[in-house]
Length: 487
Image 1 (tube, rainbow, N blue to C red):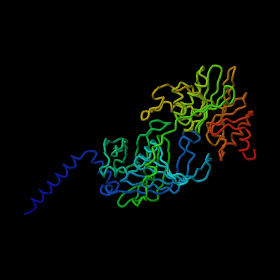
Image 2: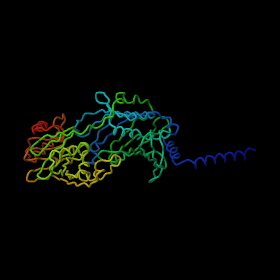
Image 3: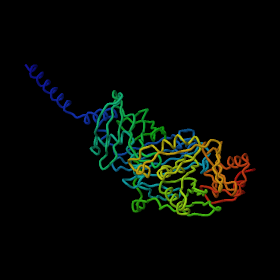
Image 4: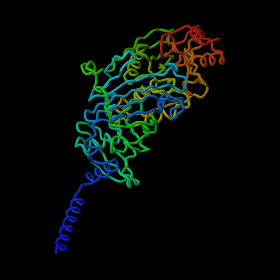
């Protein structure tokens, strides 16, 4: 006698469930599907901590032999990332060891750093923490959410909004913005399994401008109780791979003290020091533009000026350009010789282009320099974004002479140097002066690139009395010779 009534009740329940399902928004369905794929919404909603341990590698992005080279890496050991998911805090410890000739030497380097809200910090070798700048804080805040459990947990806990769910090329994408954040993180999942394959976000890079920072996830396995977590994480900045981690442990254990030390929180957010450029006469019409860690050189010709190097930052390079014009106000500054593409030595490239300088560099830098000058800088507009110009760049193969009646300048490729394939040195034959970057840095305790520089000088039969370095202080040639064993 209860059969018809039971069937009616079951039918009514089915209709209610169907109505609930059809009324769910794409964002609600995405959260339900993705949470289920990772182990369940309840498990994610209760996730308070996450500890990742393992090893891996870091790539020498922007500092390798060429812009797209990937041969220089640091082996990463003792990696531990401890995350307070609720408090949005993270502390990372790792040891990295270079597999290439490194200017700081081959010894392992242990690094400890973290983020706590807007306070980013680094712990020095002496154990003392120091607060780092706002840009570093933004990058580490983003890194905190570049893990699927952390990002999806924020949505499951009602601490992040989900928007713009869509399907592209058999993948499902959703944009997640943590509460209080201005950064939207795009999480990409397989349409069939709903397992996240990568997370990406936009960021501002001082050399590359607007970039996509992406972390890719593979090899999912059991993680915190009831949840699945990737065991391999590969990070990219646009097309450049920056790191890959192989995790041996992923759990929700006590992360330890991940809060920023009180001294860090009490400290003001550091800002870059105002550029300081101090001119020192090297010879008539030649000035060493020193200051901070990276230097430039100004060379006067009969009708124009040449600047060697626009390094370190846009602000530093613009200050060097201003000092050049101040020293010789009656002549136009028209040329920039860029020693190589490494990010710390080409950070002022776009500033020089904005100022109308023709760029001269080793031939194999040309394609990247042209790309760099065209890249969008909309997140943090720079001088070139505000004063758009096309780059004029001239490549030097093995060598080139630039001269007039008053001055002769010889440019030579430093071939075979283990620091970079695209190094140029600048030789002033009348003054017997050699200008170079990184190949020899007077005063440095480690000189791994000096033997090649000395070999190049002798092979080209250059008569050098003084080295004018773009790191360190002006030194006699004998100091280079002394830095090379059995030279």
